[in-house]
Length: 319
Image (tube, rainbow, N blue to C red; front, side, top):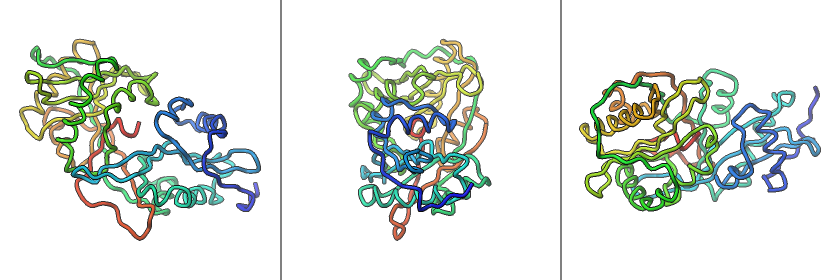
């Protein structure tokens, strides 16, 4: 197939492109999106057309990413990048990438992506166009074991109940993550929006487990029950928020384990960065490694460098 890139037109996403973009994502094999999830997750994209036919796209979410201590920068998070097979190898992906800068910089400063396929041409392409591996993401698992009865946690699985504690969740999250960089900003409607509009909300049953001392939150976790991908009935710990305290970390896991027992799942899973203290806490509790992937990023201004500091990653932020 002979392709001239002069025939390929690169455009910024417009709402009139919605049906075509969702169809492209559907045939790509990535997680199917809906118009509602696209809108509610604040997505946009850069698109490639051959005449009027959409043949490639780099879609992304738009949000504010932490630079630590309450400072955030607008960023993009790639989701479901794809070029139709017959159009690959002609530099179309690179044209789309270059247009991201044209359309979204300087408002947005950073772009991130998760790539598992280290060593493949796709992974090497991200490296070629300037992405750096910020950290390995480590995926862990633990079979369900008996734990003592824990009375000091509550399970919230409905938005109207979440809304009553959203201020407390935001404050507690910020207090325990303020020194880290790389995660999206939490707002009052963050957790309820995940319940309603997350891409996988048809594959997950969501809940928030909150541990309290009186009315004071001492840890919380966003949990998702699923059998997605491998058929294992499990709880994915999509967000784990706790002080850097060995005892409380252990008790938080005990509470999650007790809840997992009560609903009959067979496994817990969690993901975290390889240099994050949360990884060692999980190992200490008994989790073992499943696999690893890569958190990659680059600055849209090539004359600036990625922020330096302690990076933190939550599974819920890239699903």
